[in-house]
Amino acid sequence: LSPSAGLKFADVPNGLAAISKVPPGGWTQILLYMGWCEVSRGPGSDIASGRPGDFGWYVLTSADPEEKKKKLNAELANGRLAMMAIIGMFFQDGLTGSAWGDWANYTASPLRAFENELGVQ
Image (cartoon, rainbow, N blue to C red; front, side):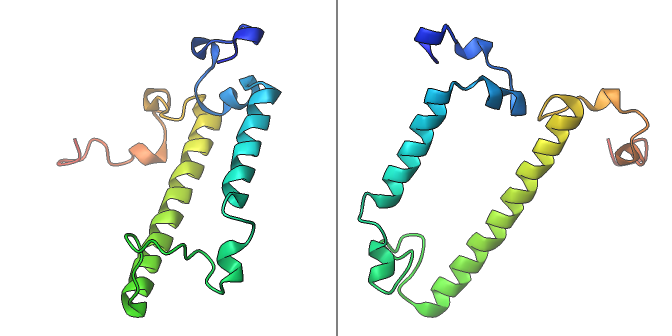
């Protein structure tokens, strides 16, 4: 990961604890790459054409307005679901120290209320 700092991938913990292990140079590289991706086609080139987000690639969208609306709504719903999932994983990582958690430690959890019911196993 960083030979000059003596940091190996094996030294980096899972979950949110990994954020503090990334060297400042690594964060700088990430931010510079993000900036390059934003301006590589010319800053605001899609906005200047009057069609923000339209780069002329219609595999995921459509030239048909009704079909495009349907696909964009599906993308919005999936994005919201993904945001809820990652926030849940952040919460669980903060609670258990692992994004996947070990539910064996939480025997009194209300999430286990129906675990012994017929058909749940």
